[in-house]
Length: 497
Image (cartoon, rainbow, N blue to C red; front, side, top):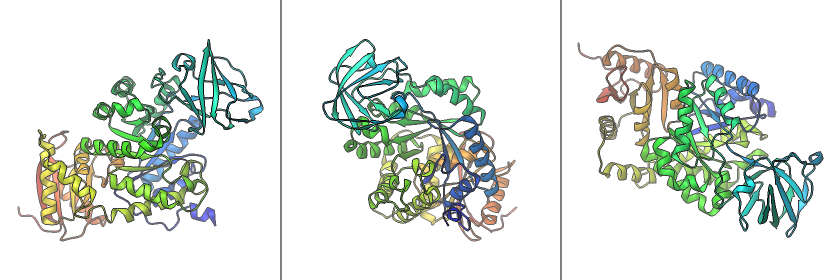
């Protein structure tokens, strides 16, 4: 019975305005489950380089692309670089052991020793140089806390403040410590070349601390001849402090609440999440809310009420996308997790456009803000206003690079947003834009021909019907950033000569 559910057979895709990112892993890395998750509502698939091998990732990418073509859905692929993750080394015979309050534990750097009670190794070579006496070391997402009492050469001496079962290869966090590890490791560079060779749509950069980290990655992508959008993962206090500068140079942001909650403290995460989402909305770049959204569904067929509220509140905050991690990568119910996320999003989105709702209030606030606007921004604002005034069925955008579609998405309109593009890369990348329905279309020679093609596509795909009013936004054909015209059309009406 479980296998039958995981095929997605009989599912009719019901897309949400807030996009869904599903992580591929052992539980979901099969064509049957990938197809099922697409039909259940997944818009972007995440390849996590912290796990798995390149041949497995390559097969997953091939399957995702093939199935997306067969299903005729715009699907993005996000490659997530591991970053300078600090971890414990291996233990003797792989055996975990118990740490109790007051126990002493030595962490040895730079030696390949097998961990045992009282003495373990760390894979990060600079640990002894980075930490200071009195600082905290958190292990396994903060479930174990140590205090540094002494540093001798390459050995960090600690005392246990909060104990637990210590297991090999668990992650280490250093809250309050300025970590000198580079944002891109040798493994990341190896994975980056693989990702670019397989033409993924997005690269997620882990542990971003400054705009310089993002610019460094973009320069490396340029030198490798790549074409990819960079998503900055905000996890450390330095990244939160520099968030405005990071947003300016990023193509998108991920609110990575796992390490963020350990580094900042869980009590600070809700406000930081809201702050980052609002700043990304203003900058017209997508923002992904991630980590533990439906965590209990790793082993349960139903989420907790708190998890359902968490997903809904991220949508009310204005997130562009919601991410599933272990829920789909290694959980028992990957397809059901996507379906549940989709149901929560669809129900929540029924209420986001209430006149006094948060999205409506933010939209009015942004429109009243003063400041210089580009021609494209002014054109989109005029189109959005017109769509509201005439009660349009939707807003149709013709875009070469996706920039105009991002501006329309920023307006958070109740109307459906259709983004037409002749480019496969743009088509796939639009999968992450809030409320946007990407449509791959043939190239037109004139604006009138473009309108005619778009009208045919909307009617043929049952996205609109004859008599519906649609606001069209376009510009000089085949020129990026030249959006400057708005036209209100009633579908099915014959145009004069």
